Image (cartoon, helix red, strand yellow):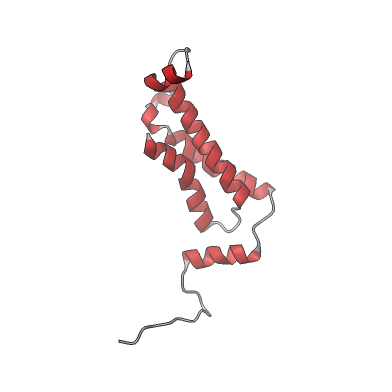
Length: 119
């Protein structure tokens, strides 16, 4: 369950933050909240002991037969979708932030100075 929550919250933001220059802070925050939220909702409504904690009385209905421990299956795609949509409708990150994305992906870029230690 912990891995489902962690994956739903962080995986989409991490991947898009590294590999898509257009991803921004608002998209990442909302994507993490949405992914974690849907995973938690699914877990709370289908996991027997959590149903008691939250007072859920409706019958247990598994979505597509997915067990509660795999709730991240729903949170990860939602996280990706929310980050992409929110990032496209909000202002793009500053140019220096977008350049930082290049340096995260490719630590040594053309034109960079490389310091080597002589042995």
